[in-house]
Image (tube, rainbow, N blue to C red; front, top):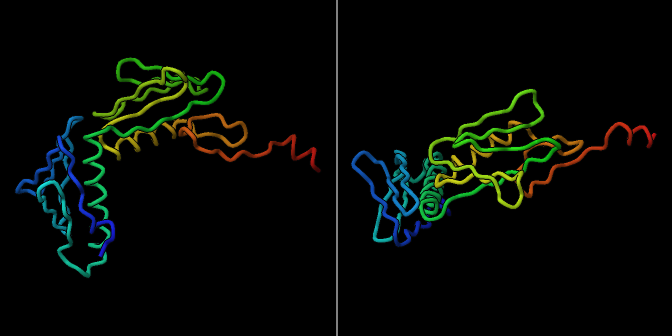
Amino acid sequence: MSRIGRQPVIIPSGVTVTKDAGGIITVKGPKGELKMPQHELVEIEIVENQIKISRKEKENPRGKSIHGLTRALLKNMVEGVVKEYQKRLEIIGVGYKAQLQGRKLILSLGYSHPVEYIPAEGIKISLDEEKKNVLIISGINKEVVGQTAAVIRAMKKPEPYKGKGIRYENEHVRRKAGKAVAKAAA
């Protein structure tokens, strides 16, 4: 049996979890509302202040993986509607900067044109007040927050020689020695 899937998800006060006849699980909380369809290989039961997940077929290998995944997704939904998820990105490089125009993010990344990005619904992008080149991406859906951060990072990945580009805060970028160092060693 899945070790993660076996654990019940505790529903905190202020959060309501419902399951309709079509198998759609709805989680409502102070920050918003999230929905997820129930997979056909698992059974979801809402008892008092807990969500219990069990498999329909005990020996199905696919069901084992879906069991743990469903529990993790439900836990992330419950946490997301209570407190928002956040990813922080640093923009490093001379002349590299970010600015916001309404919901639109405009990035100057050394290209001949500015790069524009409009985030998905429910995602908030803001600039850090203290550090001007730090983007804060937040929202209640952990998957969408992570995907948005990955898309923005992919616009200019950190390069290994000078480290310029967009990286996650506290991400370590492996640096390479340039040509001049290689010639001096020879």
